[in-house]
Length: 193
Image (cartoon, rainbow, N blue to C red; front, side):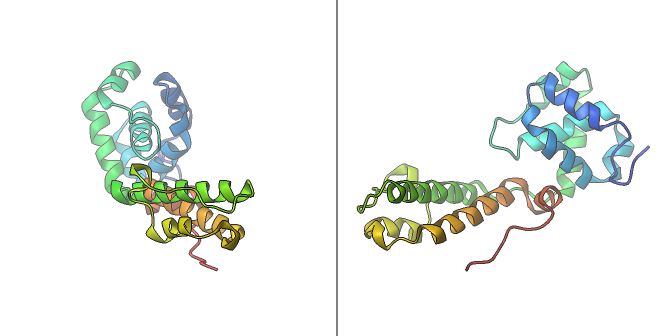
């Protein structure tokens, strides 16, 4: 029987138990969100352990850590791998996909570049750090351009605010819009002041 969020009654405990059994406890909150976004379809078709494992697998694919393999984890939990794969597919159909890897990489590298600039400014340096090489290959050119000017001209408060916006954008890029909105209540701030 499904509740108002479309989850089977009692699926909360299995998510935590499944995640703990396969050493993926960092995925619990996102797995809950993925199952809630999937609605009643998954809850009606699959038993709670299959739902929980499918939610954990989807969550693992949208976090920084390693993805949870369906075959090994289904064996650990004692559920049918094909049922888990089918449930994963149904959940993914209900969610917007994560942004392409290139977009996520650009956001991550831009955040690292901002961190380097802020660190140098906070240490009282006037000369900016060198932001070259593969670690900054895809970073936003506007941020990289800041490394060619004196840090005394850099507005640290504005750059920190920009970093926070980029962090939210990266979270949206990882999770997809529906899952981000479910977990955070609204979209990332687009205020560019």
